[in-house]
Image (cartoon, rainbow, N blue to C red; front, side):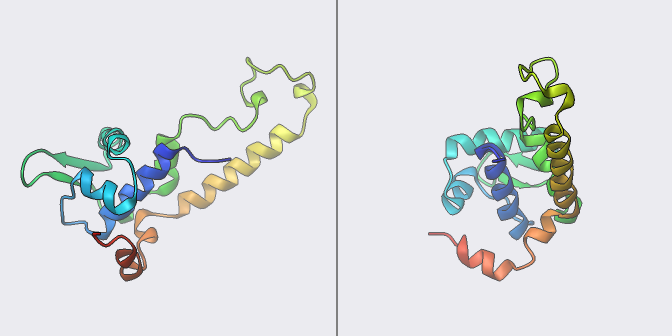
Length: 144
């Protein structure tokens, strides 16, 4: 399984915002510091705003900031809300499967359990957890 670039950029954006929770950071600065496309990041920030993770302000003093404390943002939820599809195999969508062994296959059940375990781990992690080593992270994303 591979997360989409959208989700990866959402997590990276939130991480940077959590490092500087009191400051509004422009999309351009986030993109530059986190090595992302600003065009794509505008879409990501729009989605994060819709979901209530960030607030955006236009104008000279504008930018993006966290809408709630990093400790209140669960990474599992962010991933669920920014990814489009968790059907690891075709038979996860019963009406679309062409697999002849789907009704008796154990693989789909095992993959479903693995996916639940994956989210179980991510649900334990908050955004605050991701920034527990702020000095190390800040050094890596320092303005260039």
